Image (cartoon, rainbow, N blue to C red; front, side, top):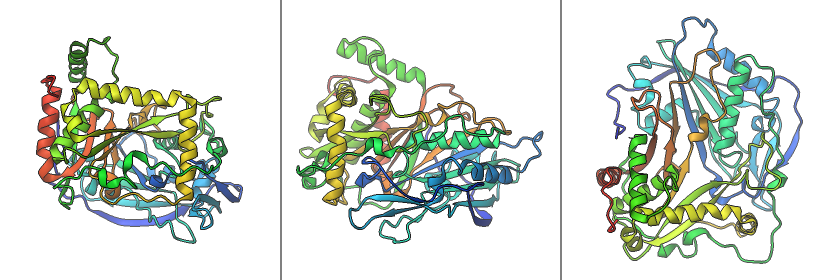
Length: 462
């Protein structure tokens, strides 16, 4: 495993300027409603991604002007993102005010070459977030706020980074990745994106009924049942990037086959790592043994809907499926047992009635203005953003990005585990990277636990 450490160099930015990039052509005006999934009470968080590009001496174009122009052209298709997101007072639902005000576009210059900074790989999220524009999230603002912002940071070596911040209420990780690939297409000379975006949020809107809201996994009304940790109140948090080789994952799969007498390759990488990370995190945090710990599985539904969502749909098309165990039950379960629970949870999306119930319950939660406990130590969201590269090339004149960093803002980092694809900077060609944030005093224990599992030290006591 290769763990993230703080860089010995300090990343500082100069000449930071901000402008609003508007669509290059006239676009529709008015208000757009969002879907039931877009209005999820936990959806008011931000995506943050940094794409790192090396210098290309053969390319004499200025990446800033190229990307600025491409963004302006792309906003003709993604025109809602150039408006403002507001929350209506009458029903607490989001709407996008399409006014073509523009997308904040930040240009900055850094102090060191990308190579000396190891292409941002060794910076903790708190530092790397300087390469991402800040979105001021204020759901009570009457004038709303920008759902998208873009930052281009130039480095003395001629390389640059593209940092994006997107509100989860407007699109999920799949939609955010689609947007970035479309931006690269237009910057590379295409006249329009290969997948023309569509709004169609009404496809995922459901009517409210008279049933009470079902709060996920007891983190609301039953929040006192959720396990707590003696460490999570610490403000001394550390983020680690842990690289796991593909061969280690395969070895772990083989171990699970022997343990559970199940067909080979019956578990996905996501299922195995979710099980390992949930258990390792629980032990590292010393959660209350007889209270509940919760794993949230983030599952896409765009392919199971009938008819399926259009290719260009960029709204939220994921639902959260929760698994509850007492901490004691989690500790006493084998990794294969936990992975089976993850697999079973994922399969729920193939039940049409289950998906309909989730969508309807979103409306109930919105109507009742459901609040979640501030102390959510025992809750872990596991997300997989390896889809950032599923749409093909992002070479628009500087070859492919040498590194892609999915970053976590402070408001969600403590409860989120993220799976990324391998870095091009890493010696391993396959495998994954796991990003996790924990109190410093718990991180050492977490890595020890995870190491033991990766080394196939699996016993029934796990």
